[in-house]
Length: 391
Image (cartoon, rainbow, N blue to C red; front, top):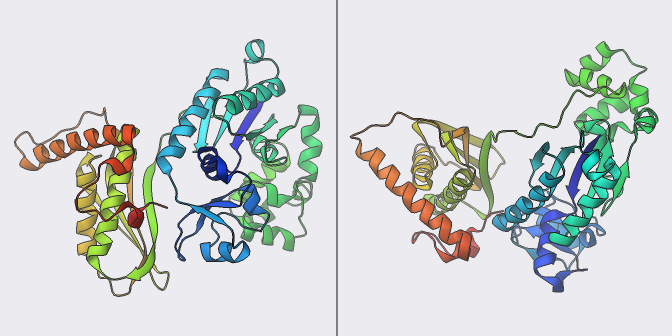
């Protein structure tokens, strides 16, 4: 049996945990400007029809008394690490799929922790006791069913789909509940008269593939209760990025560079925390017409230095024409390798020595920020934190 643990309204719940006076009030996390979007909404806010990715101005229209809190990624990551540590006590096979959810394989754990349902209840108890947050858990013999089950009784829910129940549950499962079925696929399936996974079994696989591509094979497998997905405890990070929708469109390069500096520090901090080096650095821009531009460069020597990241995206920006005002800007790092990987460096290169010097500075800054908060130490060229807070 597989457990899927999904924290309830995670970012918003952490804000209410840290600010008890906000409990019971409609709250969202995200950019407070009219251009921002909702990153997370409390259940009180969801009663007004507010949801993640909704433009902030629309959320305010639906709920004038809405409380808006800025995102605090470091705080959420810290709480997430505490939650994952709790899960590791129950099984060595834990797959963290995002900051607020994970799969756990209960195979072989019965003697220590009891049957999967009892294990799930114990996990909920310890998360509530040690982190003071609620989660919803789905328990099922298949990975995709466990994920669906965790969403059925939110918040603070527990849904168990036993082996005996699985076949009937799959037959009646609405296709829009299946992970991977988006709006387009759902529309295609409805046009074919397919409303449930049971209906999928009545259609030839070739017809599904014609309409949905290779996902048609996957959908047919799920309809027959075949899911080869396993809980993979070691899923290496493929990329790290951050982006920001600006409070006002701008073509001013100095303003854009200020945002790139803050974002380079954030991406560098995450790389160092995870023990990674990046070989490919990417600049992302979106103009006032929503046209997206990405420019990437491959470094001669992989790095996690915030200074190196910044100088790289600064150079990419310098070579990019900014014909229209920019509404969104971001920095990404990919082609990641462990920072323990042996690398060939220039023994007498001044640039290499300079980069190593900046990496030492980065680590000192990281330790100060971890102990006293990110606002405790900043680059002197950065604007006040409120202006450059990450979304």
